[in-house]
Image 1 (cartoon, rainbow over the protein chains, first blue to last red):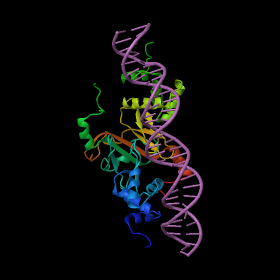
Image 2: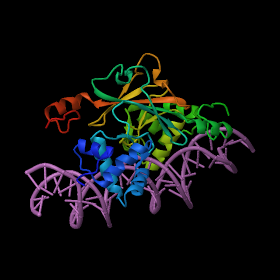
Image 3: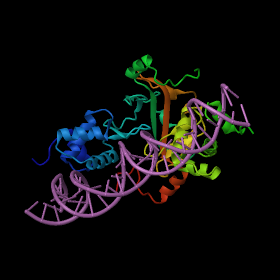
Image 4: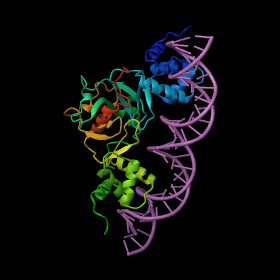
Length: 155
Length: 155
DNA sequence: CCCTAATCTTGAATGGTTCAACTTAACGAT
DNA sequence: ATCGTTAAGTTGAACCATTCAAGATTAGGG
């Protein structure tokens, strides 16, 4: 066996990265999951191959992100999360209560996302849109026990 | 003197918060600056009144944010920043190199910002848009010494 | 088969933010 | 004007995600 033929392996090789068991497992884990954080990814990786150090996971995720094989998102107040869907410029819905993340396609038809009315001289290359709200489960949950409403001015 | 009449003091009182020298200074500092981080705010506060603990600043910023008197933004990979412009839903331009932040008004005319094509059942209450790119200064800088371009595949 | 650079490992350090327990002072009521 | 309640502030330590450092391995082109 010269090299294992796998979608993930091919992707790594194509990006000029070395094909190691750890990195294949990392890419597979990220692609199989949805917006996983580093801890969860590390767990998934260890389920596939044996032990892999946390630092190796961090470093590999950096490399994969730089190579454009995975995308890193970081909703305010959360640890970084990674997803395998790259290339298309999609955005995210984040639940304020449970932190759940879902994908959303570009807001309006084309990419108005990339046209701030006044760029103040900035050379913009990406628009990062995060929609904050409550996921279906938390909506139902909050309806019963409104722990801390965001709209009430009256006592 | 029963209480000091100041825009900041009035705002605090109006929000049901106590008017203390520290909080007035914090609000004044945030309002006078542009997207300051906690460390900078703490410095500004200490220039106005004497010593104020870092924790007091954190707690006050939480309270002010909850009261809607300041807004907290947290571009991926940066510490939190605070701004005094609240109420209008504006967005931000962030420089990838130096971290500079500038305000931008809502992308397209009205608020399409708040209409993900498919909300996946989420109850969305806010759209957070961050435009990433290079500020004017860093654009000029990078043109001369391209430390690490983001677009070059050729060596 | 060999060599070099990329990758992985262990172990420690960093930095922003938060938690805990106690003291101080703002301000509505007396 | 004084008192009591409780928000606000203080000090000091703890947390957690992420990064840094230095040495051991190994993928893969030559």
